[in-house]
Length: 281
Image 1 (cartoon, rainbow, N blue to C red):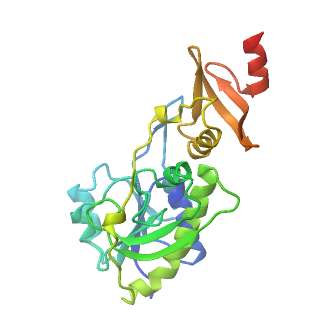
Image 2 (image 1 turned 180 degrees about the vertical axis):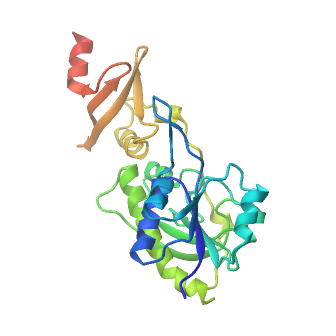
Image 3 (image 1 turned 90 degrees about the vertical axis):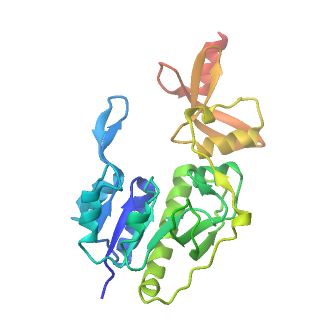
């Protein structure tokens, strides 16, 4: 009998995981995601990527403002759930939620835990030049990325470094495949989670817009790692006088950080050579 589970997720990372589950014929019975919110310059109210995916696949989508809301919790308690799955949902699940499914809540985390816990594991692995990366399926407890490990898979991308979007898709897809392998055995009670080595844990921080600022003549490889990690958000930029200049295309070549295209504040994207020509003329 196929498992009955709810999927908690919000951004594109979670969509990649869902696609991998779909390929294994393991669709959730319902999806929980964040509320719609204003995005872009026009601040148009936009649904999360996971909501769009869920509606396209005729899956019920719930968007609670608060996870401790009694009406929301009551809806979930009305059904016998085998387990829950979390992939980049964006909030810690409270005990009231974790207590609902019979077999706990599994999380897809894009690093080899206990390394790179926290808010920005993918970006932080790129910034750290962590060539050996991977994914972890863990059993969630009430602390962030703290629960015991159910399964792991290592990946060493070649070439390296990858851009954030490429590494996100790679890790999310691999995480979804690993989860699809784990689910049948987990449902049958055949897997025993192993506690993490908490003494080896490392932590990542929430990224801010200011993190994308670089010195164009600073260390070339560090600048390139930042360019890979921080695109598309917050983007990498520098100041030319009072002008904020966003770098939209760049390469690492012959130990040099080669800027190819930029978008000066208030202007259109242009070749960096054209920008320099205008700037020095």
